Length: 131
Image 1: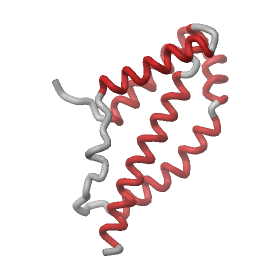
Image 2 (image 1 turned 30 degrees about the horizontal axis):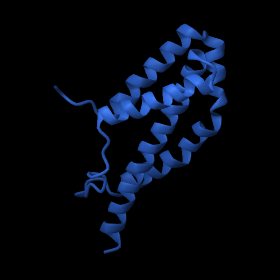
Image 3 (image 1 turned 135 degrees about the horizontal axis):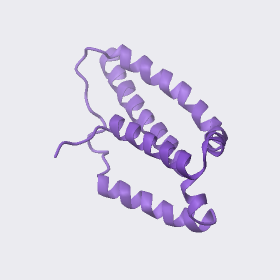
């Protein structure tokens, strides 16, 4: 079985989240839920710019994978997600409140992934240019 890359998982999960939101909440409520997370969306801008900057700086160079020991298995990720779902089910007053948190989790996962990759590129940049 081929393994999905994190990029493909994020794209597929985004499509799934938006599809569920549109089906359950409708277009107006979906847009409202996304707008509510504007600060996290804005946080992606500087992280993305740093990511692109360091990725371009080390482009074409042999890179060290500093993240090779920091991997989460899919099983652990699903268990982690399910624990949050149970907590949200009770904290957010049921199923509707629980799924309204999915977009926030998606954004947090994207921010975490970008930060990890940016730090990896930064460490490679420091290793290549400050040796």
